[in-house]
Image (cartoon, rainbow over all chains, first blue to last red):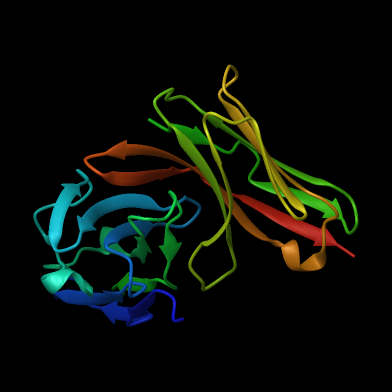
Amino acid sequence: DTGVSQDPRHKITKRGQNVTFRCDPISEHNRLYWYRQTLGQGPEFLTYFQNEAQLEKSRLLSDRFSAERPKGSFSTLEIQRTEQGDSAMYLCASSSFRGGYEQYFGPGTRLTVT
Amino acid sequence: DQQVKQNSPSLSVQEGRISILNCDYTNSMFDYFLWYKKYPAEGPTFLISISSIKDKNEDGRFTVFLNKSAKHLSLHIVPSQPGDSAVYFCAASRLIQGAQKLVFGQGTRLTINP
């Protein structure tokens, strides 16, 4: 059983560039979440997918952010025109409809915008 | 507004003793509470959870207590072991549009001293 995987683990980019992160959830999990964590804080909810449908987005997710989950499998999170304030750890989590409320997290992608 | 608060940024405990981590919340609509453990450069790992209809849940060395009237929960680890040294996050959950959105506290860094 493989857990949640994320790629890349680290990304350094220059301000103004676009970046894309990928998340592969646990295979039987139909719910997928993206969170962002900055230094000294807990993770903050960004968006949620049930299968391929994006059902909720946080107001933290500005117009420069877009997430997709084609075919209800892996998901991508794209940030356009990155800003230094986007530097953070981006975490993906998944959960099962049949399971409890527990969400299982991947290792995260650490983004540094220079 | 910080709906979930962990007021102790750090805690140091002797190996073999009890570790008690505390968490307060403000939103009475939360119906499920979870504790996650996080090592550096890894995503949060689910530890234990409790439904709002219960006041205690135990799993091995870990016990979570919920006091709904005080809007307070705590995690007890006994006996504490060096491998328990990590950052611990409490999280509260509310069902919104089928999404179990987690709201996290800021975390408490637990250090177990040999």
